[in-house]
Image 1 (spheres, helix red, strand yellow):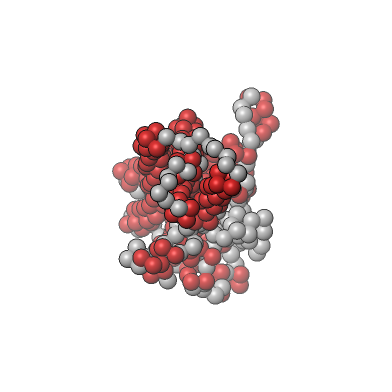
Image 2: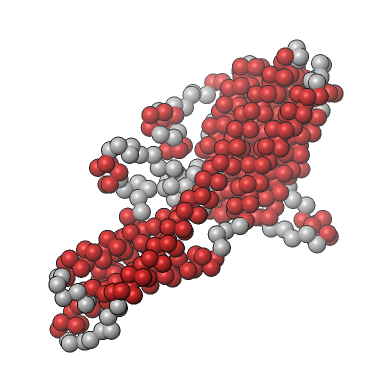
Length: 396
């Protein structure tokens, strides 16, 4: 299933995001791989520092311009402080990256868990009639909508597509999730595309809880209370993942720490030429090489930490949330197929398709007519999908 994404939109034609997979045992591949490398970003900084060193050397040797050299001892102590700041900066950025990853894993795991438990609990009670299949399909659809709207929120800073504008929302869900700006003005509640987007997963989760609680009226043989509570507990864990992502998006790394690391790091790196000017034993080529490597090390780590701070976007090392959510949707479609057959699986695919243009059967609100079913579509091999970069090559 291919979900709509700003990466597939005409307004954004950049390469799909990562993460970048690699073979750490292949040293040459790691050293010279360009995709996902920090080299393109750090090289201009290294080049600028080398040019600065050459200019200072030429001015001193050809025009007898005397520069106040940096004390080597003082520069060593400054290097210790800078090293501590940068290591802490990278460590905190990596911790945030892993937290994002953990919350995303929780969200995707509960997508599969909730649908699977709903299928198992309802079928064990011999609920296999039309009403039960509609209930399971509604659970799956609204469950996928929570995941899809969360993905839209994660990518909103880049895509500028609000969660309530995604094409997967339809009918009751679209009406319920569309913000009522008239009421918000009346109640003096702040609103905007970004703020309204953050409210959409909560609204869909409310509809999902209503569907779960409606099982007593809609199923011929209702589930016992412990099974219903288990489903509601999965929704709670579902939202824990969403709240974790939302919290990290709303609370960046403290600015003073970022400012200190950048200021001290750049000050240290771009005063290196003044230190090497005092080196009477070396030559210009050796000094330029040392300056290049030191600049690459310090500035490169600063740039890496910047990439880790925000793992959602279009950078090569960012997490492709929409693609991962699409993989979870594929699993849910398979579950519905195994439980209720290909027609209901096609109906769910139809609801989650990004370009819904064919009519839906009015009797169920979900099922396409037999002549318009999606089973006639040719299967898409994973190697041809745009999201193939989001998985390692060995899975193809």
